[in-house]
Image (cartoon, rainbow, N blue to C red):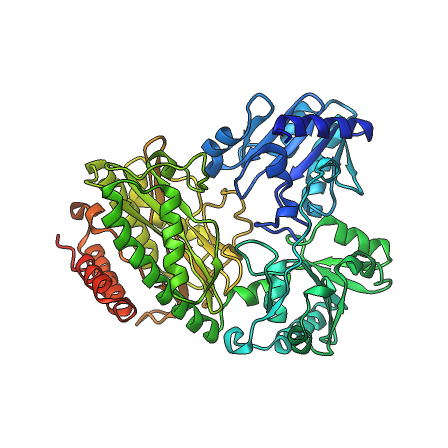
Length: 599
């Protein structure tokens, strides 16, 4: 078995043999996905890094791995500092590092199926003064040395029925056709897997935790479409569902099809499409226009059927989490439980509900110092015992046919310290401030982010991750285009106004390195709000997640009367809505834990 050091040496040898002085390795696939199939986990295979965001650059004598503040500790634990420089983003960039370390005249390779055109142009511009050339490679050098690389998934697709989708695929494609007419374009390329799943009302099992199928799509101005997917993924039911207006071709035919638009105009989203897609259309004589994929916003603004489905999924999921919280409160103090055993028990509770399709992401089950890693992933090597005197953080979610959930709770094992209670309560205050915000139409998540941080800022504290992300409808747990984050936060992208129907997370936190982590996360629905006497269109949030907060961690002396009222109203709602789904013992425990918190 090779080590990461062996793999780095092998990659350098391969680059040298192919007249390349370096190579850029992203953590993504040819669809610019956040979560990727095992076949596309090139960064993890090469470096050992297990985070969900990052990239690397390899030169002949030096290599660097680029991660943001979520992974400052994790990357140092998983990736050898003898082989790799640790580079933080957004403070530093790939272009900046290459400009400093690549020798003048160097040839740096990149895979055009793994990067956007914008990123490549940015790098090329930054490196031009040093006469460094970017070279598009036809075959990925990492793949050439990854001899046991997994094959892409061959799992079958399934139909997402209109009773759950709320709108037919034909109606969605008709909307795209109308958009194309307004834009003066002949076709739209749709490379993003979750957009394809939403547009065609199909789901898949090709990427762990995200119900999508490896595919591409081209939608034409007449409302017809070409879907490029491995033929053996189609069942008779899926074929019947797609109908005659959707022509199915092998996924391998996609690149060739892009070259068939000579004399025509093709709309492509530059944020979602890799450079190779633009290159192929233009090489065939077509004209490309950079436009945001219209399915992105339509997918984010959930229709009434999707919202109702999410409410049902949240209630079902909340009952499973409540059963788990009772279990961990009783069992952890006895000893013998670990991060892995606790995560397995929560999965069991969700499975016992009978509707779980998958987790929506790998559960973050973390105690003590592991809780200080916001995106920690427990392994057999990192697994810690859940012990008295520590905090236990559980961030998890489920994929159900009718919705995708994501929530975080913190449990004290034994008696929490005054500092733990102070930090938890400040995080809770920020959570409440965001949950109760009322704001005018056109407001972006970046404008609201400070509401969640203010109680921490007052104590000289902060957290190094975004406050909220969009969530799909039985789709990606991280969904664009809206976010609640500092504008400078990695991946924030352009400011996106919040709109009614969007579902976003509300998850402020606090992390004390080497000691503990705290995060409180619920999902929020953006709703229209009528403000008597107001003259502007206003929006607000409605909390969707149902799971009890930990009353033992609340320091009521830090709370206002309105904050106490919110907590008590929320807990009462949780108890009332979840009680019918629980047995007598779980119901009694929930009611006791949700009794009013007194000032």
